[in-house]
Length: 160
Image (tube, rainbow, N blue to C red; front, side):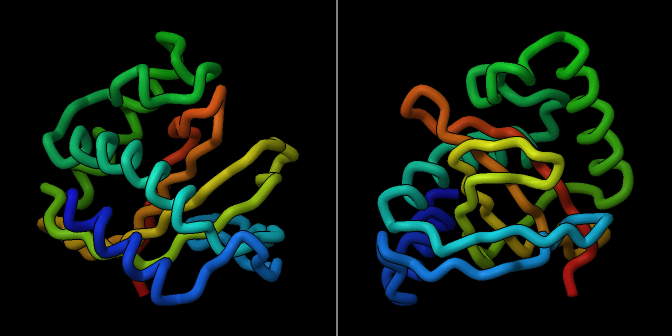
């Protein structure tokens, strides 16, 4: 996972992402409704911070942990009911795709609003991951909360 962090950071540096980034309308890669949002490239510093948390979360996913560490989650998602939702979603992933294998950084985007009106400082990290039974595009959505990145969403779909 640390290699993933280094590769993504290097990719961001090579792509020339800066704090003054152009905003573009993009379609979320894992959106069932093909929602379009305003997004821009992530600064190298923000990407590095977001990937630290994403890597911790993905280490749990790779190990088959049924629910993510509460400390990694956005505060409103830490309730027992929400953890049961996480457990059901991850259980379905393991059943459908099998064990998680190697992942490759695809892209990272920054936005201030998600579909449904949720506002905040969001970073979305998209990975292409080889699972035992499928190759999936995974999107980890993080929010900056009290100066720390926290997981607010995880989605996956067949990679194109």
